[in-house]
Image (tube, rainbow, N blue to C red; front, side):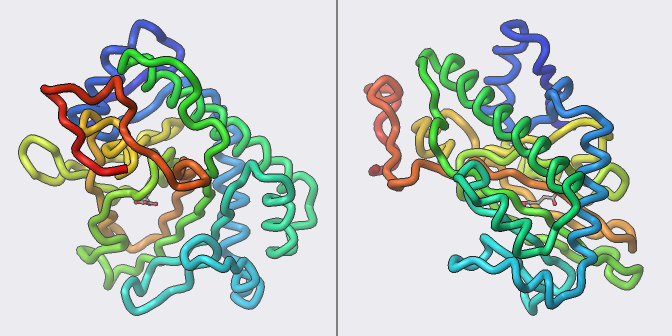
Length: 268
Ligand code: AKG
């Protein structure tokens, strides 16, 4: 299975983290700071939101496709998702709550607290990646992060079919709370090209590196290809936070990561 990184064991696990990012482009996180209780509560609120009447879910709109509600569609007849773009921007989460008529302060608090910890975790991973490559600073500072709550409406007839097609994430990295019971997430092994089943491991998170990580690191970090299959005819829910990229869109490999052995792979 994919590497497991203990966030409480740094700098001890720094080498293991970098190996995971170079060789796998994905890993599991333990001791990440979100308690099992809060993960359970976030899952329950997510289920509640996804079960709201469709006319309410449709209010979770966004001018950019995929950043708000993604309804069931032909390309993906079982997949739908709710979204909130740039969760740390002032008013963004309040707008999300208002769209979905979330008036229960406890539900608002669960989502807000959960996302604050996940966001800080993302920033922390960014610093650790910089250090691991011999650089310093705050890589993800000010970058928009997007929440997406995914629902796979699996039925017994759907077993063996695809819930989310093979893709890489376009942003820098994704922190995912996968369903703690229903598996289906599969990553392509960089070495062999085989699908690796990322089996549920309750209480942990999955981190996937995206295209921007490969671009920025000049090919040192691997953007893992992954998909979600249907193994069982039960609803599957996952909660993703995407660390996207700088607001102005400009990101190239820093000079320190470009030399004669590592010529620039991507034009900024
Ligand atoms: C994504 O959000 O990019 C995914 O691939 C979702 C993975 C999952 O649902 O476990």
